[in-house]
Image (cartoon, rainbow, N blue to C red; front, side):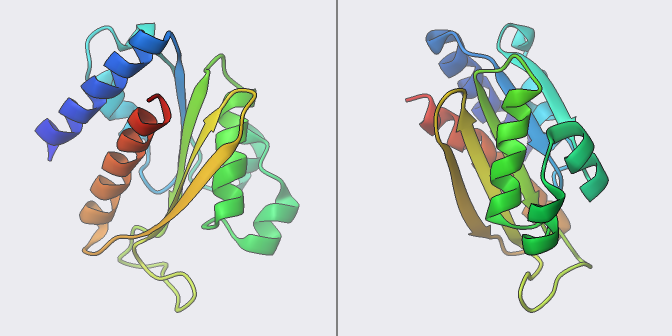
Length: 161
């Protein structure tokens, strides 16, 4: 897992350097895993601005400006919250692009409406639109988190193409 994640993080860095952009992350269910993968890369300070690990709704509101109304209406695991997290990461950083992740990693916390493995990932560009995708990852907690990290990083590469 680590070598694949490290390689894709290296590719994110190459894309960022080519485009001259900085990245910020806003993470919930991955607990900072995307930021950890990025900072494995020597020299990542040239293209990685900061990370927000916002595990609670309070943290999402205080650190990223996620609306309490949005949280109440849709829940933390929703495309709306992922979008606001990505917007907040841009608003509270000097980054040009952001990625935000919220989901149910399990093994507890899942419901019929929001089962374990449901993850929303949002990518944002300063001054541009926020893109959000829904994923339903199989496997246990580690598999859900690993896939969330990999798809987050790949999405950054796709965004920078």
